[in-house]
Length: 457
Ligand SMILES: *Cc1c(COP(=O)(O)O)cnc(C)c1O
Image 1 (spheres, protein in one colour):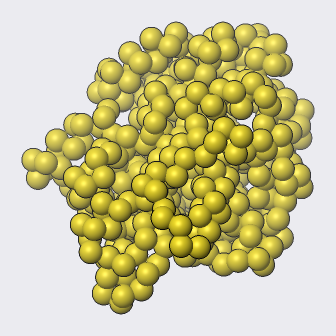
Image 2 (cartoon, rainbow, N blue to C red; image 1 turned 30 degrees about the vertical axis):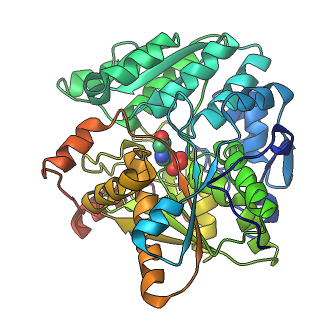
């Protein structure tokens, strides 16, 4: 097809997905079941239903239904900020003088500044439909808490967010966005839960961690009548909701007959990457087409590239079920990286299985080179990327530069998950030449692995 490709490929409302795509249906090797840590038996729907909404439990456990209807109410909410543009990075290509064709799917065009809203609205919707009063969650960097606050405000649900204490203090603007949407934001650890009080007693000056905030949010949800706990990444249900990203991308590419050679995305818990690649991975799994798929993670928290594929807890407080995944160990504490959304010890069970089966690759990159790529991108494409998203940019730039050397006209698609306007302290560090890279030693990784439960897989 020789049609001129526009800078931004938008879809009509009528072309937006009406169903999410569940890639597990096409996987020969399904992700391993979540286990109850007490019995080591697969978690039952009843057990999961004490913590999560009933409909979300169904989605979590569904390995067989390929397409799941997106309820009308969620589709109309999506229309408020979707479809998101698929941008042809003509300006970047020109700057790089590369024969590669570069596209990015931009998810930063909503108030949460990230793709997180795609799942937040779905999770809040099912909570509301179940007649619940509210939901609890944790937030680290703040994007997830912001997205959930907005979704809850829209539906009239109470929203209680445990925000890692150091972020609560260092990111007052994120906190105020959440409060503007009506969420109650508590710095974690706090005295509002037993586990929080226990941690405060043991470590009086602690600045908190994501693992600890998860434990508090779960305790809070299970001790309040009419509340459930929600999570912004890692789980199968979250990855399912995020497939709107990939489905829109595929429809937009198909409109112009474009077939990507490689698809690149950053991976924290794996939800945006999983959502972006799902429809493409489906084709790959069914033997219809082949794509090179690359997950990019920080060298400071290298779950895929240096982790182990084993059962582990999803949180540091060991209150969650066990999931088989690439993990650095629930007790692994990554160094203070500026890409807060990628500082997670584990990984989506779906992506872990796909990676284990050789269906995708992973690369780890240092944060200084990531910020250099962010700057290079911002100066020609205008968008100031989130540090998390800039991991994908870094590898997309590397690949485009390789094409310049080899003369290959590869088509590269990457996920630009969000904007970085709340991350200006990190940019300041970089601009001042004060950013440092930290790569954990083998001994530090061993210490993390030692915190994992010993389970025969
Ligand atoms: C949370 C977040 C990520 C990482 O989460 P995934 O579940 O791996 O997608 C990436 N980018 C942004 C902007 C985020 O907010």
